[in-house]
Image 1 (cartoon, one colour):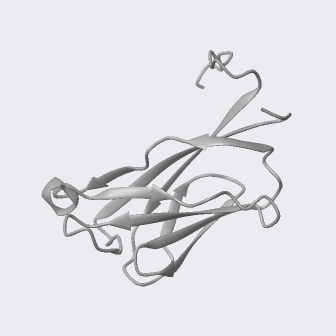
Image 2: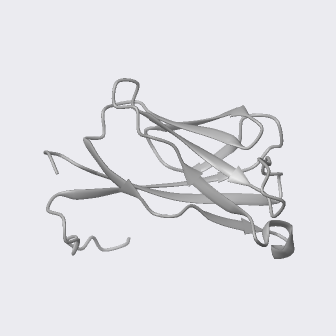
Length: 122
């Protein structure tokens, strides 16, 4: 079993929600990691991460990491986060191809996201 260590963040009470999805083209992706979070495909290149319970006050997100069976498939691709919607407990992540157009992840592509919240105001 993995040991649990105290957080060493510079923001007290920061909690990281780690989520990994596998693309499915123009359909809902397969969530491989991220209990309490549902991930849906909204439209081309737009993925919505919705929490089943309020995770706290949104602090921010690290850049979403992309991975592919053939790395060149996502070379020069980028991700952008929308604003966190605290009322509906969700945030959208947009995926852009190397041509700077929205693009869907395929079954040989993955995205890893780290969303950071805290229990009290920032």
